[in-house]
Image 1 (cartoon, helix red, strand yellow):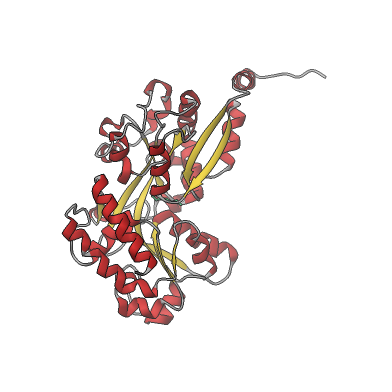
Image 2 (cartoon, rainbow, N blue to C red):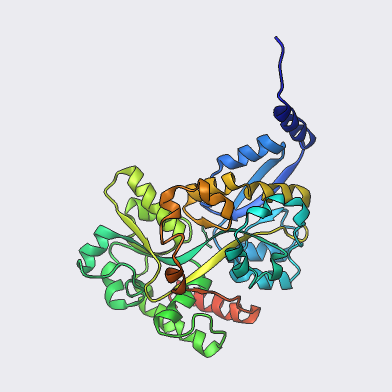
Amino acid sequence: MKTILTTAALALFITSAAHAEETVYVYNWADYIDESLLEKFTTETGIKVVYDNFDSTDMLETKILAGNSGYDVVFPSGSIFQRLIAAGAFQPLNKDMLPNAVHLWSAIEQRTADFDPNNNYSINYMWGSTGIAVNVGKVREALGDDMPLDTMELLFNPEYASKLADCGINFLDASSEIVPAALTYIGEDPNSQDPDVIAKAEPVLEAVRPFVRKFSSSGYITDLATGDICVSMAWSGDGLQARERAAQAGNGVEIQYHAFREGSGMWFDQIAVPADAPNPDAAHEFINFLMEPENAAAISNFVWYANGNLGSQEFLKTEILNDPGLYPSEEGMKNLYMKNTWDAETQRLVTRMWTRVKSGL
Ligand code: N2P
């Protein structure tokens, strides 16, 4: 029997064969990709993917700053980006190797340039807000039908938090999210670098600490979906993944995600290449693959986060593109603040505070 290869198939075959022995090492947030894309990348390029997860910026930062992480592609958040650039942690991207950059969305690139000038070192992967995910039935049962579900009061006011303790409160284990939110709650600037202002977050957190069941930044998606917790500070797409998992399980749990009515932080998760990446060429191929509009859309359709790829929008599920929690209107954008990078000293202060709060000291 004759095998007839089309030109396209032949080209794919040749490319794959050329990379047969190569591997790209990738380090990304948990619950943040459709893993079938990793196989698709290997089929298209012949490059294998080793894909590891983290669930806090601290884990990523520690690994990158220690050097020799072995990773080729990493996903740092904007909130730590300037510190990592200053430490020489990344190599500039070679834009010639990223033809799919034409699909990027300039409205997002303008914002990410705040922490990565000219977007020299990174491409936006996903972006979103940090707000609140609630189990509608359980919260109504505990607090009545009139209680708004999009308010920080549920998390930071002991009067309400004490009533939600039994059905379960989760805080993200992320000081860079919790501390600015606590400052917003008491009417302070979430971006303050003033140690005296930052210190004001601690009593706010201590007052509700006895009512917090968990500090989790990844397991909370399942905990919400199964009804094991009823309210959590949440990243937008994680809240919506919980909503979808509950709907699929048909267990009667209804989850909603809201940005905080008092104001939510807006964040950007970037794609970057460590300065000491073992295989920067494969890293660029992988990044270019992620920027293919169909692929960027497939990821957003799976993880429920907005992305920075304008070309992907025609491939997005309409319920994602039209969800104001994901792609907010100009009006909705006004209630989202950008979180600056804390300098290393301020971050140490916040990390120590966070450790005290978590341990309940
Ligand atoms: C994905 C978490 C995204 C992190 N599970 C928000 N920056």
